[in-house]
Amino acid sequence: MDWSLGEEFQTPDGVVRWAALGSGDPVVLVHGTPYSSLLWRDIAPALALTRKVFVFDHLGFGQSDQREGQDLSLAAHARNFSGLLDHWGLSRPSVVAHDIGGAVTLRTLLLERASFGDLTLFDAVSGGRWERGLFRLILQQAEVFRQLPDYAHEALVAAHLRHATHVGFRPGVLEAFLAPWRGPDGQAAFYRQYSQIKEADTAEYEHLLGEISIPVRLIWGREDRILPPQYAEWLHEKIPHAELHWIEGAGHLLQEDAPARLMAHLTARCTAR
Image (tube, rainbow, N blue to C red; front, side):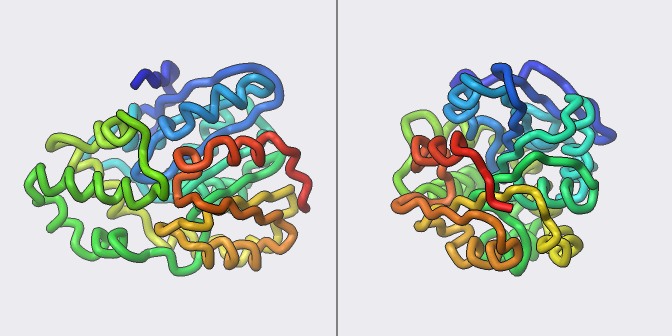
């Protein structure tokens, strides 16, 4: 599957790879785990018809550097994202974030003090008690998971990816998402990043959520099994001026389950404030 990030941004822990498409008002797309910017392969070109779109792979993910010793905490991702915004010369871009990308962007906004024009969060980690399910097991037993035989590791990751979609992946997509996590290096990278993503890094900004003054839009798949609808309701309570939109018949991966309906929201003006 052809998806290439041709630009590089150097961080203390390695290179973050990124790309920009189109021209116009800037919008930045932020992915979560265990995915990469490949999630935006349909969304980014469509948005680029009218806007300048920035995509990147978090450090430790996709085409960005993976190696032992990297700081892959939400706090580190937020610092890297803030650095990227400076590198791109963006002062008030629109930001769209999914999964842990939500926590990264919220830390960047509230603790790194970056300036956004507006913020869209969908099926996103934001705060509260989100260490659950497989994620909690990996946090508790990271060393055991690192020792899984390769076939067991691959089966686990594939099942986790399938669990995120309500309608299933199109041909070739699951293989593309699996690729960065295969082999000894990929397996080590998978559990390295999961073992560093913790609620403590979202607890630090929760008390500031009600102070967000920019327009905020929340979009959620009604069938999300990774972050079920109560997480959207929790976030809406914390940011009461935010718009909240439900997408029926879709799970955690709106980019895969309902790309047209997601695009309809992303191309509509976000005015809630």
